[in-house]
Image (cartoon, rainbow, N blue to C red):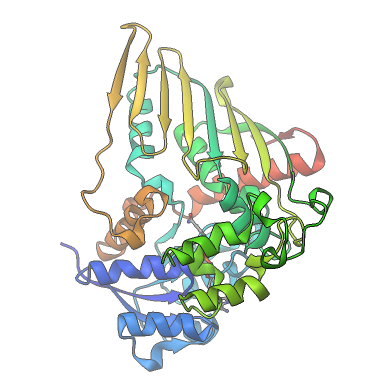
Length: 424
Ligand SMILES: NC(=O)c1ccc[n+]([C@@H]2O[C@H](COP(=O)([O-])OP(=O)(O)OC[C@H]3O[C@@H](n4cnc5c(N)ncnc54)[C@H](O)[C@@H]3O)[C@@H](O)[C@H]2O)c1
């Protein structure tokens, strides 16, 4: 029998609001009783939506962490570089934690979070949302059934989407490593984690990576282009024009993500959007930003027993986040794109078998990101806390640390231009 859990939202931005919305759809399961965010409009929006007592509204995570524990759990959805400190502080206070990925931006900080959560014996779930997604779980079930025999190779592609990359990784919050984290950690830690998960406990022994920032650099700025799209006379010829990506949507009355991120005052109207594009970061020419994170990266991995994996992250795609996976086994080949189905070609029967993963009949729109994986994640976390059952969490501290360490080693390989041999 599950009961209602109480949560504090630390960081009431895009992700914090999405997870908090679970409480509005399922009030018997979760209640948001506190919020911390330095942006007044963001914390006010959450306060009003969840009728939060004013004594539990904070402009920073620290005063909330200093109080006697007053909720069952915290949702930490602060910017990448602000994960470790609140995670350790709230773990020490005995809160269960839903922690946005990446866990932290250095291996040492990730390890410190693991130590703190183990010492306090709390439930910690990292938001590797795809690990709760029925399609990824169906792939794992098929692999475990040995229908395709032993895995020889996993080929996995993450298409970021051309405008999405420009939005988040050229103009937006994850454009500059010094302010957030490197691309592989910020964008593809999900994918390295999935590969590790599908390999089923086999350790990765060697890893190598290449990657570069292509195209979104000053050298590629077309002649005659202005430094802001609204002032640019050749904007019509540019696929990355902010006018096309945001203003057109606003003019059609669409103000959800990514448009919702653009207006730093939280207002959803054409005037605010136009002003934000005139003055703010999202109106900048993509060839004139302070971005440095890579736009295309490959990672090769060798696992115990000789199986290999090849991962590609690429900005320049039509599709956004529709991941493509092929897994080559000794008895069959598995293919899956996006929300499935999962298809297996059985070598012995020489026929195709189709698996359609069971998905929830209705996922609330606010939890629909990542094909609805956000919903499955928060649902599992709430159940784990309500039933005090950490086994409902697929992405606990130790497990997440392992796959994060692979991401750090892959990045080390890219930077140092060498194969990294992992400790056995
Ligand atoms: N799991 C996923 O697939 C996924 C997807 C997107 C983003 N993320 C991660 O989620 C996190 C949040 O991303 P977002 O898109 O919501 O960003 P966001 O900028 O919309 O939200 C972050 C919020 O944290 C607040 N904040 C900053 N300093 C704070 C402090 N001292 N105390 C409390 N709050 C503070 C900001 O004001 C902001 O409202 C990031 O780490 C990001 O990488 C994960």
